[in-house]
Amino acid sequence: MALNDGFGLCRRVHYLLRMATVLLVEDDHVVRGAMLRSLADRGHAVHAVGTALDALRRVAAETPDLVVLDLGLPDLDGSDALRMLRGITDVPIIIATARDDEQTVVRLLRAGADDYMVKPFTGAHLDARITTVLRRVGRASRAAQPAVHEVGELRVDVGERSAALGDQQLNLTRKEFDLLAYLAARPGRVVSRRELLEEVWRQPSVGEDQTIDVHLYWLRRKLGESAAKPRYLRTVRGVGFRLVAPD
Image 1 (cartoon, rainbow, N blue to C red):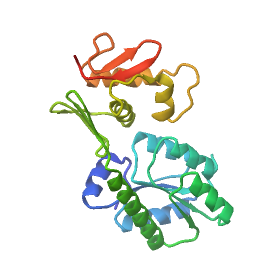
Image 2 (cartoon, helix red, strand yellow):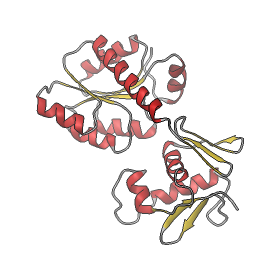
Image 3 (cartoon, rainbow, N blue to C red):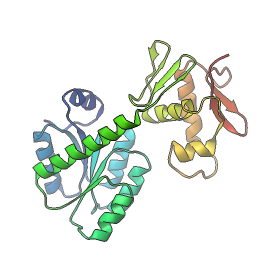
Image 4 (cartoon, rainbow, N blue to C red):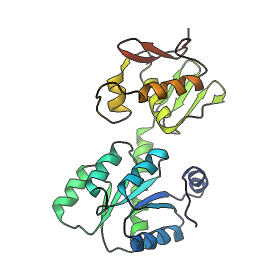
């Protein structure tokens, strides 16, 4: 299995074959190469990076099924990287490190890690942990029964991460979908800019952040409307935004 530069096509093909798309974050090129080959030989689609910032960029661009995260990274400590990753994604994260003290293990699990492996370990062991974590997450997802929100002709399927306006599928970026899904789950309710920054972008509201306006602009275009002629997305001046069915 060759290393792929992006997750999009890989995810569609490998999902059908019940394989996982894995982001491997490991700074040691020898260890990284060995883990990459081992996971690829076991049928996973793997993308490998050597720094925390590269991992954050990759996850922000397109979400993998699972992240294997080393703690000894050159730019950020792995615990900080874990915290930042948890701020932008809820995908499973397995910590892979030489640190084996119980206090560190407990702290990282409480900070959002799904599992913890102490080096050295075999490729078969890592593959087994990946399978177990994904199975556990899959059971939780099925039990949660992700909602489908319908507002007028707009249909947002949270589980499938898809949205359609009537018979037309909407081609949304990850953050555009997150924004639309958050508003669709609260039809008619005014949602403040601060709430969107904290709940959708997972960052504190500090001053005026133009990122919401940019995403709303493109989201409106894809819904066939504009701020001057809104249909679904309404601005409540000085308060926030709400999603409603057209009149």
